[in-house]
Image (cartoon, rainbow, N blue to C red; front, side, top):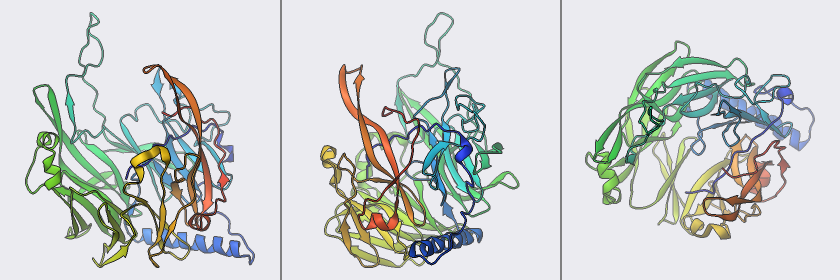
Length: 480
């Protein structure tokens, strides 16, 4: 389902307040209920880490942003909405929101750093061009960079980059971006480029981990011109294991061009594939809309070690549908069905949760008892964005659905940005600004600053607007 566009904000503050980042917080003592809950939450988190160490797969990249990473202590993300200029270069930076202090900052430990040049530890190095994803595993943060993935796209006309001797437009060859992986400590120190991947390939921006190794989708892209149109097609597509210790890659699973990773469960990868029933070209996909109406969407689980594939569900592409993988379960919703189907990706067992109307599962929150609470919106909720929309919380254990009441001044639900075992980081409100738009010659009201806040999962689930506002310093005043 489509969500309201958001703007990542710029944060300017020195690294001095970033203490203990990425380490276990000291345990509190005492017999109070809140302290007991905090200790239990820490135990739960350690149990999760223990499972990860045994080789279970975990999605490391965010499906919606592809450029953020959350821990129990804080949230890391790319800030590319506020530019630091050096030699006319755009310099996005790594930011960190510290939950304990309630502050945002550049991920930089240099004293008196102004965060405006490549000398800043938070600013990405100049050679890190192309598409970038940010994620973490164990005690490290990772950045993977690759050429932008153009597979499946069509372009018309000729694009010129640069000028000839007489000032005329002239096509120029662009130096290819070799996929690479960078690594650093959770406090941003010891950043290094640890390895290059295969030249002439691109990454899809999805990373999984098993505690030791990383896994990503690597493929090649070919272009074919027909008249003024150019069609880009992906091929030789594999899930590859990235052995960080020995700095080498290994092909694990061959994937279809249309296949995407929805999630993982234990040592199984869950994928979704659009199946046309025949081989079709990129040109045909762009010119024949009926192809999609006739296609199926096949959801499979694939054992990472044996390669064994099991079909979990086949859906019709002519109907809108959505999938969310959490733990061992995949939640499937459809725009013409008053039910949510739950399939266990390990056993294949299915159960049905009935709803009063077709609902899309956009987020999953796990409560203190370990029950999945589904954040849902109606499939027709976005028909009129100006009037806002409603959301619902569905308890998968009881089947009870409650109306969500936590909204911002736009009358839209507060948006979940990141989760811990007991807290949510949310966009709790907006501050609108009026700006002149020169190309249309009018003033327009747009979303300016966004308010980030922490709220306990318990309060969120029970519709109690008890927020701890995050101090965001140096916020941009324009929606990018």
